[in-house]
Image (cartoon, rainbow, N blue to C red; front, side):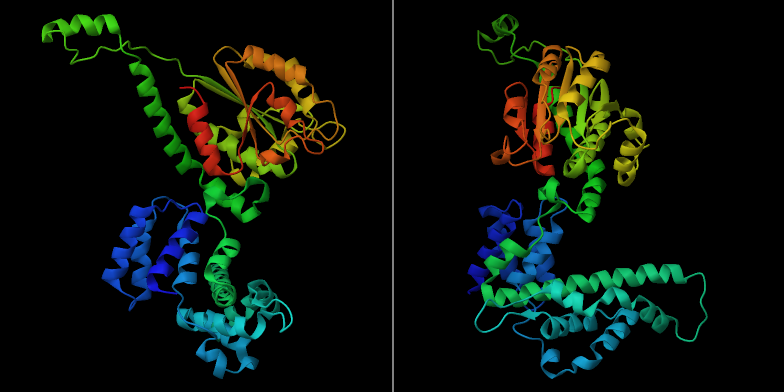
Length: 448
């Protein structure tokens, strides 16, 4: 592969991960490559990152793709060809204890070469980071690394901090193993194939329904920065809305002083009232992570609205606004708090949209008025219960807008026990699978 083709493939891999790399950025990257050359790989990494990245949360995907298209080596590491596998674990302990970055990179290559290969001559072959780490079990070495760091000294109060540092070093080594396994696999299957299937998506493209605990934690940490960005957008929209449309009569009167040429248009200024927001959120099962993230995001935007009220449900509905007030909510514990402190379940734990909507209309319909935009968050899977379309219709009659954000892909709507298509005939339903889509919907759908 030529250097130009490698760079084009690298840019394409970044686009697959949601990084906006167009022709202009690719030309800039080519200029960086020409100036910096290939002599210093880490300097080239930083130069390309400066040319190609424009948003937070993209660096991890960038680094993974860079290691595929601009690898540190080819084939098995030299140390793996000549090294002794029998003392791999002991050398890893020493490298972790000394925080030896070079040795850890070398050991990652040896570990993948010795433990990560799978397949045979008659079937598919590859290199597996999961298989390597399962066989090596680096997380079990913490006590031995701590002993190597401490030497003959007695245990003291700093051991707790040392343990945290060792865990960080082990996590770094695990990342090196994953990088090495992707590099070796790319030599067999091609960098484009591995980049498409083996690189974790950037944070704003993580599917809410498939996000793991660590990814959800990353999303929750992104709430405040994302809220600040959205607040800026909504404030700009509010300024444009306040400016209004051209006042033709005043513009023509003003043009008399310029011979009838309307050089200074006059606008009909008005002050739009800030809207009220009501969130109605399904907090059951896999959609809970999506609901919790959106709750915290909208609450962080509370200054952009005159009032924000949040209701959660599984098969019963309860108001949870108090639990997510600004500065009072612990994102990690939000889901547990709602399920234990709010009355969101009855005699069973399955979602029942019909009963939840009925309880909302019976108890909390006064929260909805002509200035209220209602956001319903959920996958619309009723578990076979009556969807109660009349209740949603009642809410729509009282509200200014009703939007339904569904984290499931649109082709799955109304499959199985989903009533999504039925609800979509009443409320304006949108597919909302990741934070990028959520950001777009919140910034464009909600009135200002």
